[in-house]
Image 1 (cartoon, one colour):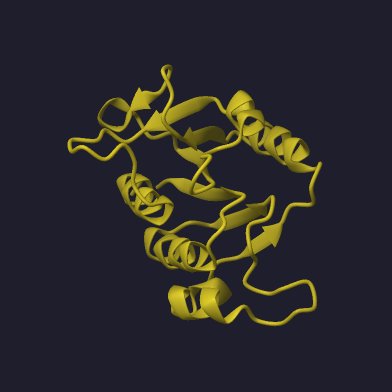
Image 2 (cartoon, rainbow, N blue to C red):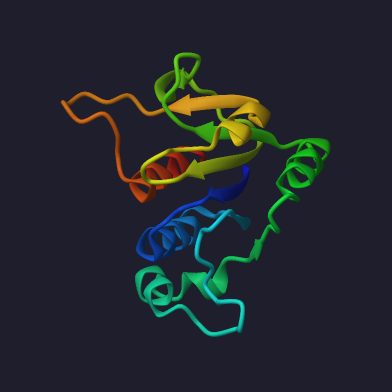
Length: 156
């Protein structure tokens, strides 16, 4: 059995966040950490974010999550590494391991990045592995929520 966590790095779209929650629920993700300006299922006043709730089909209430305060992300990474997690950034990079060649660690925390900029440089630097999904067509990338589905269900 694998232990999977997700770290969201400045995802812009509430719909993508909701979709990642729904996929995380289905793939058995234990916890989601929300970083940067990623919208949370509840705003700072405790109000439910309707777009996330709708897209997640309620999974935003079933998958535990927390917002990581800006500046405390690296403390989170250190704690996860001490707890035996391998930090895996899902991103295109020259040094990336192709998904077809990746051996899933027993304890893994996947970083998913911004829809335009990808995983931030700072987060890439703390990752133990950069993981890339091979593309066969003319498009260079996939939607972040689609990437989440591919990577998380491969970790079953």
